[in-house]
Length: 403
Image (tube, rainbow, N blue to C red):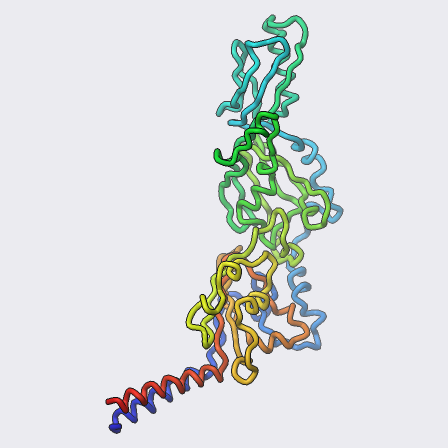
């Protein structure tokens, strides 16, 4: 082997070994080291444990919270719940109207774009936002006023099919936008239910709109969810969703707008599955630990990329095969979480030594919750890296000998 090749091999080895040395801690614009990021669990586990009772993440998070607008007793939605409860009609709903001993007015009607039902010979009848009982009463009044009947006839107004509705959702949700909820695709229509005058309205509920907008964020004030209808603001307390009680869940109409205020703090008790939480967390993963040559052989598939809402960082790291293996060669691994503050839209990078975090009794205080769209990358242990350097040097040496 020539002196040039020998020098090149040595230089390559030195550079490779240099890459095994420690790297600087990732920089963040947010002061995550002191717990002043979106969630206090973003702090690095290097604080004084003597003051652990004062430095618990739950206490740090709670100290930033503004008072719940719905009050502490959960009575913030009584009037609104009464006013908005029950099934309400909206435009494009299909209704079946039957009037006893009559063939002129009975039939199927679709509520028009202006929110009215147009029966022959009658003035358009307002249906938007009203119950079927209220529509029945107005039909009866018009029939008597027009001398079509002397006495009030028997009238039945029933919904044959609830249409989808479009509402705007803003505030402390992960994907604030206009959403379309409810309705059934044509290939999924149950004709037997329609002929039986049975239609489900659950798809048009407030909870469905919140989930369609990505679900409520952990900083949401669900004690005072705002629904604006026809210029009137209604405030609803939805804390029952997380308390195992019957929650206020009204039926929405096209044109409604929903706004979820923020308490300005990260609330751990909202980091769990519920009808108004994100349906799950889809992660972006990279697990290229040796001897895997790619994500497929590391078992990073669909089931791993999608985890339940409320999953913590360490659970995802274990789920991606970044933990365990031979202690002598695989124990000294690390992982990095790439996340984003959903309020300020500022990205953060949190690096953890996996084995150190596993062995901390207070690990939950430094184990972040995963948010939708987070990314995780795994890094090999120092021993594995050195072994890889040796393999590269061997390949270079063989190449040099071949020359």
